[in-house]
Image (tube, rainbow, N blue to C red):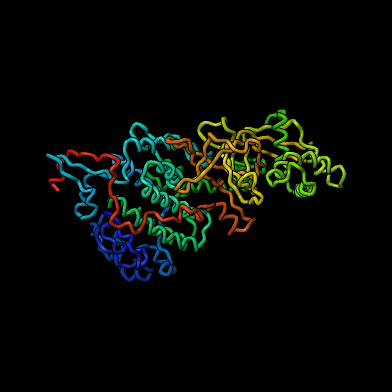
Length: 618
């Protein structure tokens, strides 16, 4: 059974409603189905009595799909409740991702692209370019559909995921589940599909699928990314509800009817349900799935879970009355506590390294900002020969400020902290291999194997010059991407301490899908490698085996919620980031007017020949 007809959720005047060729061969003039209220359900069920045991099952009627009356209707408020069920996003997302992967790779155990699928198209009278061609006795030729991958493209798809390394606590090692020889995936868990659907799938398909197919799947990925956000804005979810209808209709234009199982269809209701009920992470099955650890007797799993959970609750209650010296779940430190991991090693800084670190502290410390402005005015008033242009002024200020500042504070009244900052840090600093800050765990490159904790991202207000002659530079926020090379703690002789990350920064760009790419072969800002540890956020990079670029994936720390800031500004920026404002999510998928020019098959990949007599029997 397939579940199509998603054009019902489109606007009544949408062009796709009358498009027969690109969909199921019929016009769609019906409106959105009206959800049943509790009173409607009770009217249908009437005085039905539940029959338990091994009674003979009756066929379900179209207008009456229920086999029994829910016991929840005995509750006085259940009839007027807005929602009488909860769609589990965890399993829906998992099954959709599994469905997409099996369709793209055409996995033999449960393929979605086979002869019977093509015979469905024959029976429906649509997509004649994909109809099987009888080329001889028991031989049928199947043209290659535009969503199908060649053997070489399947190899690229699998090698991208085989090389994936994610930060610690972000997800499991997905690469161990990739079988390059069979071009298949084995042993993926629900959370692995969660990571694949939202982050890794778009990286794997960007170079192997036609643009129009890849764009639709990336929009589906972005839909689940926003749906699973910790913060919901009602207005955004109104547009998301309309967006998923367009995405599913676009999928109908590309994939065969067998692709649209019930799980794919249920995604049409998720945004509306989240808007009414709330964020999905309060309702999905991940916490419930963890109860499986209580199962000791597989013959009675429910009883094992009840007894195990009850014992755990009893121990939790008792632990409240234990001495503070006894480690319990209430006084146990969290896994990632802000600060260094280990005691570090005292080392001497090279002169250039000392100067670069000291420069960064001075130009980014709040106490020194007034002096930086004063020095800039000093350079302008003296009209130095080397600073007649803005480009030269900025460069000259960077090179001379620390010397001017050290001499200037001797003649003015300033605080002790400012005096020691002017003097400069101790040439002996403490180095660390790992550091936890803002909920992120960072490990310098070269000290990890199965995880990737060295990816850093920083957004800085930067003066942008078009060229050296530009007299009107623009100040704008620029995001830089790099790799963590070293962690040092600068000590200003006991009066101030600053933890700095020394990074290699790389050239970045955006591709036509809106994904951020980084080229590890092109270093930038070699003379300014330092940033404050508090300024960085964590990213991880996925290598594209077809070129020298790595795709950037941003992360958010687990169990961290900013309750002190402005909810609408801070939290939406932290948890939705640039996903809602990304030009990729709002750009059209395929031209709606292309109509007769739709190509259902790929002429760049040869089709397949099937030896079978199924077609004659059909």
